[in-house]
Length: 223
Picture 1 (spheres, rainbow, N blue to C red):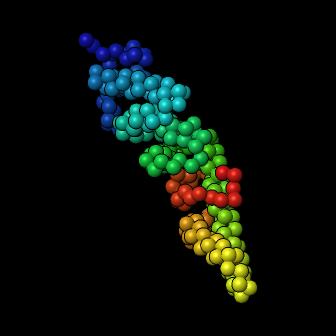
Picture 2: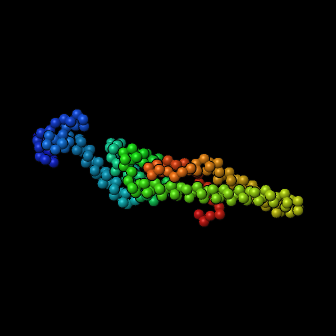
Picture 3: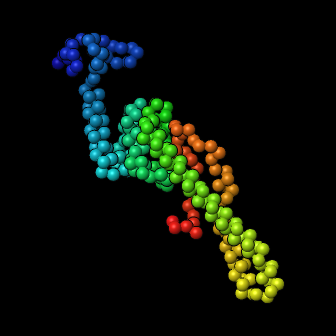
């Protein structure tokens, strides 16, 4: 059966060396073989299903479906945008504790950055993510300062209490002193100093590439 262009109806085609494909002589529409048409059909079907899963909030299904498509269509910006949207649970997850999903989102962000596909909503997400990140760091810093103050008070009061023969009070201060040392160590003050940002990130900086401190239970807080 002779080929006919679906756009203009032309029956003739030529090979375009620059694009490495056959194209319609009339309008340049690519001539697709049967296997290519089947592949494109599967691509559109998968994209349609992924969008349904995205609307339903099935984030993992979206990521598993779009991964293979990204390998086959590495320049399709929509794939990476949808992957980040799924990884961030519709731009609501500011932390992304699961490293596998975080790594996927980071990879997708770098692809979009290279393809100039970072949309405004992605930029806004990056800014909100940075603000949430700084709030976590400041909360950790405040807890470190509180425990350092408790350590200092215990250090100063312990000799006085001991001289007054207040054994029970002295034991309480000693225990509290030990707890304060333990809490300061677990809150990782040196690591906090190392990762504390010296300036706000650029709008296109990858928000998933930041180093996070391990979670610890914070006292003196509602959370």
